[in-house]
Length: 211
Ligand SMILES: *Cc1c(COP(=O)(O)O)cnc(C)c1O
Image (cartoon, rainbow, N blue to C red):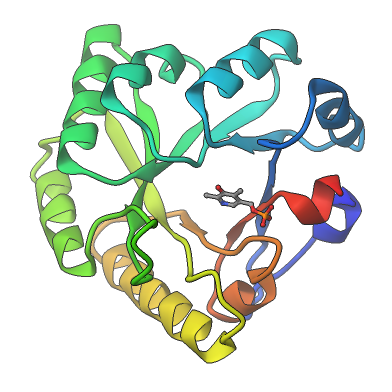
C-alpha cells in the first residue's frame, strides 16, 4: 500500500520521500502504484530499469539503487533521476566523464558501507572525506552529490541497526556542513521506522508497497 508511505515525517519533522522499489514487480503492478499519483520508483538492475523505462510513462522518476557496473552507466545516464549506489572512486570518475561527454549533470548519492555484512557495497566511512574533498575542489564537474545512502545489516537486532543508521546520520550532518545536501537515503520495508528515528528523509520500500 503506497498510501501508508505518503506524508511521512522523520524525527526532525522533515518530509520523507518514498522510493517504491519495483525490482520484483511487473509493469502492471507499477502502473497501479503510479495511478495512486506516485512517481518515484527504484530498480537494482540496469537491464530491468531500461526495459521498464521504455515501457512506462516518461514522467516517472527512476532511481538506481543496486550495485552499478561502469560499463552499464551509459545505458541509464540520460534518463536516471538519482543514482543511490555510487560505491567506488572509479564509478564516480566514470559517471563524471560520461556526463561531461554528454553535457549533462548527474545526481548521485554516495553509498556508505555501514554494515559489516560482506554482501553490502559502499565506501568506508573514512573514505567519504576524500570524496567530499574532491567534490569541493570541483574534480567532479558534472556530478551533483545530493546526499548519502546506506543499508543496515539484515538482522532482527534493532540496536545493531540503530547504531548503523546513527553512524550514517552523523556523517550526513557532518558533510551537510561542507556542502548543501538534500537526501539521506536509508530504510527499507523492515527497518524504515528505525531509519526515520535517525532522520532519514528518503526511504526505499519494496515488499511493503507491492505485496
Ligand atoms: C530491494 C531493495 C530495497 C527494498 O527492499 P524491501 O525489503 O523489499 O523494502 C531497498 N534498497 C535496496 C538497495 C534494495 O536492493
